[in-house]
Each structure stands twice: as C-alpha cells, then as structure tokens.
Length: 459
Image (cartoon, rainbow, N blue to C red):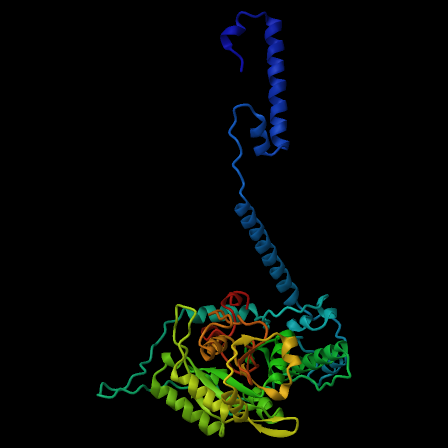
C-alpha cells in the first residue's frame, strides 16, 4: 500500500516510478490468484488463515459420493442406450429373421431387446435390473390428466348390524384366460450336459427373443402391462424352478388374482411335474371374510392345491415370531407330491427323515456345496411370485429369524439363494418377476409395487 502523505515529499519522477511498480505487482498477484487454487494462495500469504484439515473420514465420504455419482451417471447412460429406438437396427439371427417375415408387416421392435443382442444396442449386459417397455409420451400425459379428476369413493361395509360383513369390490381388471387370452411365459429350452455354456447361452437368447417378438406381434403395446424384458432376470427364475420340488406361489391377499400367473403355474405343475401351494400373504391387512372368499375362489378354479392364508408378524428385532400360519404352510408342503427322475415322490418322506434325525441346521449353503450333496437326500421348496409379495419375509418367518435380506422396495432380491431349513429340507428364495398380461392398468401395477417407484418417472 502507498502512503498518500509520503507521496508529497517525493519528486515527480519518483512518484511515477513507485506507481508503476505498484501496478506491476498488483497485476502479477491477480495472475497468480487466477492460476493457483485459492487454498494454495492463502497458504503462501503471510498471516493468512490456514487451510482446514481433511480427515480420513471426510476422504471416505468424498470417495463414496464420487462413486455414487459415477454409478448414477452410468445408469442414466445405460437407460438411454437401453430404451433408444431400434427401428433402424437390422435384425440378426434366425428368430429375428422369422419375426421380420411375419404376416403383420413391419412391427416396432421391443426396445429392451438390446439386452439380448449387442448388435441391436452395441453391447451385451448381464445386469439384473428390471426392464420394461417405455410408454409413449401421449399415454403418460393422458394418465396425468386422468389423475386430476375427483375420486368417487365406494363404501365396502354393509349395514350397521351386529355382524358387519364387507362387500368386496368388483375385480378391477379382466380375468386372464376368461375375458382376455393368456400370454405364455418364456421357457428355458431343453439342454443337457453335452452342450457348452456358450451354446446354452445362445439357445436361451434366441428362444427368449423369439418369445418376446411374438408377444409384440400378437398384441398391441397399449394392451400389455409392464412385464419383464430382461433375460437375466428370467434366467434366475428358470434356475430356481429347476431346483424346486415344491413351488410356493406367493400372492398378495389384497388382490391375489392380479398377481396370479396361470401360464407360469401350469408350466411348473403340469409340464415340470412340481408340487404347488398357493400362499395368500399379508392377510393381516384384509378382512377375514374377504380372505375366505378368495380361498374359496382358488379352491374352485385350482382344485387339488392347498391355499394357505399367511402373514408375517412385525418385529423390530432380529427375531421373527412364528405364527400358526407357518405350521399350516409347512403342513401343506408335506402333503405335496412331485416328479423326480421319472418317479412320483411324496414330500412327507423328507420331513419324516428330519424327524428321525432331529437335525435342525439353519445355515446358508453355497452353491458348490449344495451340488456336492446328493440331490436325492433332500427336497427343495422354492418361493415364486411377483415383486413385493413378501417372499423373503416369509422365509425369515419360517426360520424364526432374519436369514435373508428383505425390503419394502420391489425387486430387492436379485439372485436366487438356497438355505437349509432342516437337513433334508432346502428353501430357495427367487427374485420377483412380472409376467405378461393383457388389459392391466399401469396405475394398478404402481399401487401394488410391481416395480420400483423410481422407475415411474421414466415409464
């Protein structure tokens, strides 16, 4: 800084020289501040405040934030590539060739087919992220306008008598297989141990793509619900069903027919010869009279299959209380019969073997150890159903403690996993999957949590 009073005691040329030097120093300091980070400039100045210390915990938080931002950016990039138009892509493979020669002329390819062939999207991914067909913008805007209309509530209670019975509302969608045709589910092609993993992978991809193309050839997009397009998720279901001897179909008791896939049920019971039990979960939020009506309905339309009302008691600790419904469910499994190696077997024999040994091994078994154990010494019970049906919570209730992770977010279970309830009884938890259906309102799928709510903005 220049002292103004001292300037009057200097000659003219001395003042000019001092002023030039001051301007030069000021310009150099400005240039340094522009190129050097602010923290470094402060450290170089005498008397300036020191930089704040950066702890190891803050460094870890910074790295986590960077990883999360990078993962989110990658997901957005994958979504853009996944849902981009494939009208200009040239179909490859026998399945695509047969679809292109269909009698209905050119059809719009399901955008999610890039999950199967890299030639359509430029890459092949093994992600287990749920994939649906995106909706047109006009349909989304129409639903937004419809959501702004007033809601007329209908009472579900009868007269104010001593015994109040609810009047169930009419079923909100057409009954699949009665009012609208059924859509078959994709099936794993036949295979044996002589083919290589690469050949099996190619066969599964071609079979799945042929099924997916056929669905869009035979039905309009606006008539289809949001169903799974990712072959990797279907592969998890195929392998969990293959391991199963008894399949427990878990349905939401509030509207079980909405979650019941008749083609998948027939494939498991009739084509594969597995035993089956229907489990109406979450009955604690439904009136008992309504639950009884649903039990009667399934007893009439699915004869010979036990229908078990079930609920999981809420618990704030790691211990899960086992209600009477657990015993009823296991008794229903005991009564099942299934095909194995050309013979019809009873599930009761494996429970009897456990009763004799009194061995209760609640432990998760790695896949390689499970394969090493002879398969004829134990039976496998697989839980099957839509996302958010509470399959993982049921398994925790069977064990009486938390053995698998569960969440209110749909699609929390990504991979199937096996755990031995007893020495001769194995439980398999499979990821939830949405089967194709007709005339199902998208809003109803959102309400029942058929897919994560974060995907609602995109679809």
